[in-house]
Length: 292
Length: 130
Image (tube, rainbow over all chains, first blue to last red; front, side, top):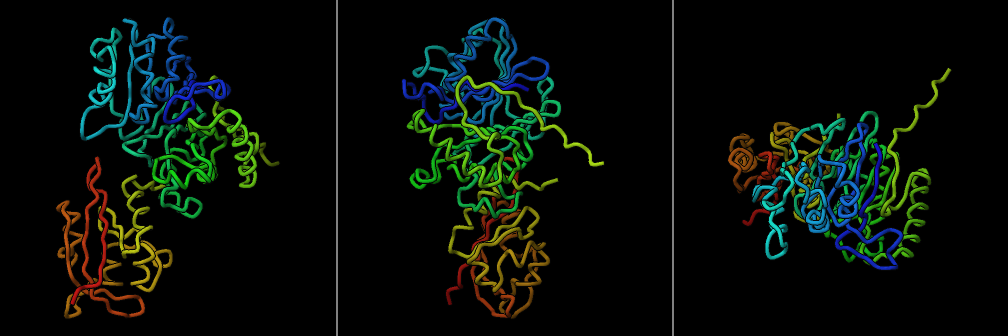
């Protein structure tokens, strides 16, 4: 399974010369599965750049939405395959007792916010609630679970062969909860992320910033690191960068994160900040040699 | 296999943890799966020490009991009404701490209903007004 980050910013796009290295586009991650097919995690503004590259060659696309906050769907209307008649797009997302997924997304892709309506899109598009149990897309097994954020929000666990990726872009598991002490069954997202090969996880705030943002649905650094250690993630990618955090700030933040990760017993090579266009392969660690 | 709790129960536990009102969390079968520090003070034992108990076990250990000191049948408890009917329920009765102290309390049980159905209930306790 290969990963490419197309948008790592949280809340709102943050373009500008001081944001160039980590990027200003909002949440979008591309997964290339073992059969060559593509799975897309979230449709923030990063999906626009992804769509430009795949429009001609990829008629069938699955998009997994964590939730419907604008920074996770804003790019949908600018996703080139939506405007091609040969495209078949399936959009998965959280269910709601209030309205269907299509109705809720249509509130954005409709007047006065949009010049086009969902029904006018030339592609074939379907909207599906994520199932309560695991399901398959191509060679991947997908699991979606509700996680702590503001409003109905999912995290995803994607397993392809021996490799597992967990994507929890917006998550505040430490809200009112001592993460380091809780039994695993009481930690939001634990089962999704347990023993995963790559955990892509919310880390919007420094610990100092968090005190002004408690309950906003995002994690501070220490909670993200503790969560990752508790679930024993093999590798951690810090995601959903605050729009106020410049490249320079994120460089320092990354250094601090790595130091604390090592203090917690983590491998310094197994933590990084998500950056736009970053590509990596998800691989399970090689098994230890058998004792003789 | 980890018995991962539904998010609604996780959030309820986090909420109760931070309250000064004695409160319990029960699962859909009425089993006591958590209580907060304030409730621990009332019972004379922390949740970490007491542990999870089935409805029968915790009823036997701490009550509730009627004015006359008789155990109240499970079917008559506010918690049971909240779980079975999906409605808030209120009651007044006695409980015992593990040290044998008796407390006259009022209790309100609030059902936790999620998309998948009844997940459990939150039970809040107050000293009874005499």
